Length: 494
Image (cartoon, rainbow, N blue to C red; front, side, top):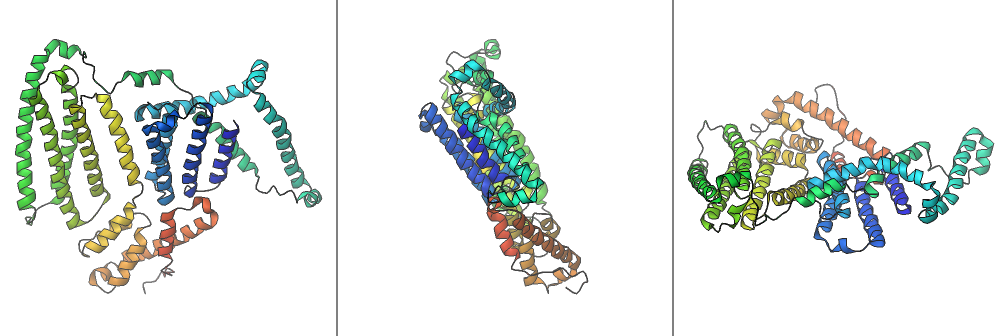
């Protein structure tokens, strides 16, 4: 309880009337350190030998650094998800990511009941005599001190003379709003620190094995028979491989021959978006079909030919991803970066990860749950790494540097976050006398207005917060904005 009280006090001081920034990184470091020390002190150091514990802690601390570096919505959400994941893994290392999220969520909600129940237990004479001696001793000293501080603050507020006589006791850092904030945190975080395991969820997770038993069978397999399943799998995989070989041949021909010299009427958006939508459906079906085929006795039939067909089909799907990457690259080189086009790359990366893990599943004879466990953690690592990227800055910098004025969608760049303004201002300074820029004068007036507003907002935010709220992205952005001393002029002399 002493460690928990201290932890909540630190978190409250770091977050009270502050934004997320450096404090998120400090909280993750302190939370991992304190929880690890408490478990080491009370139980053993076995968790330190677990690669999964180290992975969960590094992902959580890494996302804390991402919040400090970027402070984007994505990094904050991933920070919360990784916090749930670490909390569950710290107490139950064997839990998978999906179940750990549910386990931590139920511990959070049950923490409210657990908190008030523990208060009632303090007054249970038998429990107080056996387990709560330290807590009672702690209350003997703290309760009078807390009550004395409360009345001191009240009397100082009521009488100026009393305040003058007692102002050497500097308690200005204590405020009623901080006390309320601390109490709310103390109750809200109780279920995370005093973790309450759900046995049903634990047993459910244990029941889902990574390996497929040698004697596994189900109703479908019993009805069809392993021999008939082999025939169906062979004919299906041969047909699908032939179809995908033909598709990849046509696609490679287009990428290698037609795409370098595209026709004038080629519409990249129709070409790419239609292909990606089909790719989404096909890869999901690929993983589903192969997981169903290799769910039981077909794994142990010794038929290497069928397994080779399955792996070949997955590799051909990876080739389809590669050609889609080339198409997306050509699309971007002609019309610039957008969030959707970056999203295509992200999806292709996740799809490739899913296909590679499916190959591992088939070769090593693993279950569907093995695939879900590893894919979910892989996705979390991929998204966590994306939390470090300043996407808006990347989009604006690329489009303004690599495209001509006729190709640039200025309205789209203006719809992005604040990172757009320094790059737009630099572009305007360089190209202000070009016809395309002169024709868009109303657009640039909007840019100047928003530039000034953003600069003022960031300066006010800096004044209203302390070092706890510092994040690198906003500090760098403000430094770039300060290079331009703009005061918006409403008339059109600019």
